[in-house]
Image (cartoon, rainbow, N blue to C red; front, side):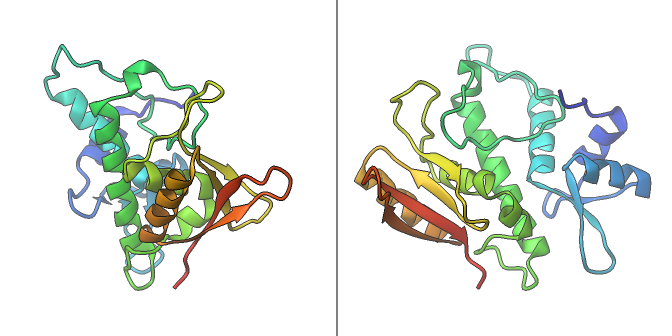
Length: 217
């Protein structure tokens, strides 16, 4: 289980710049957030630290807990450490984690991802994946799809929706969908999010799928 954030770490995350996610703190405090995946150190001087998508999610969760909630709306359980998990499809999902709360969660994570692109791509571009996405292909592709409104497959066999899976290729993921229109829609979403995507046919099953990799230029 992920260790809960300390009070000092929560204060640092909540005090991050609302626009850029820039953090302030001691070197030890900032390094601790980096180790937890909630912050990253900018590669260019002055080497400031900024929130990662998980860090933005942690701040969103802290803000949501501080706001009065609607008692009629199911609330997602508090996350230990506030780490966002993109849905690749096929994983069990608690009913309380669905609905408006999940929509806000995904929107915050996607905005954090765009900010991470802006801060880490050499030309500050937000229209193509950054280094983090290239090392977390399944999570990155799944976030792009869910943020665009696509529905991941449920845990039960036969539940419709997309499924993002690893492939033998180190720089590509496979996306499976229940029908041709959904598959084409996934291609369009991934291309708009900075990925190279195309439809292919599995030799044995003859089923169509999408092969996608982060665009570099």
